[in-house]
Amino acid sequence: MERIELNRARLTECRERLGLSKREAAKRMNMSQPAYLRYESGERTPSIHVVQTMADVLSTSVDYLLGNNDDDSPDSFIIRYSDDPILFEIIQNYKNDESTKERLMAYFNKLK
Image (tube, rainbow, N blue to C red; front, side):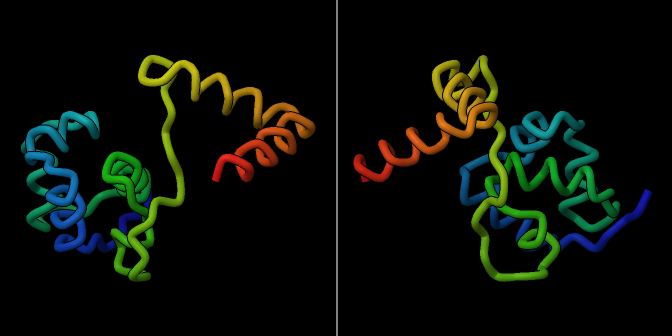
């Protein structure tokens, strides 16, 4: 598995921006606190899969955490049914039906 160079300062910045402790960040990333601490301190280099999980949890992009760009906007979202069943259902319908996509986007644009 390929290992990449994580920008530790950005990892810390994103965690702190969300007001997460190191313990809470580790919990949300489904890893132990010591494992997370090793990533943030640079003692351990994560796989690209771990960096993707970090980016998802910290609401940013993999490229931002790697220092490849300065745009900290997320490039993906995780929507769990248990967290927001209505939004989950909307997304489920949206991605499976082209006409639903068009109607939802038209409605969304009117709401903006």
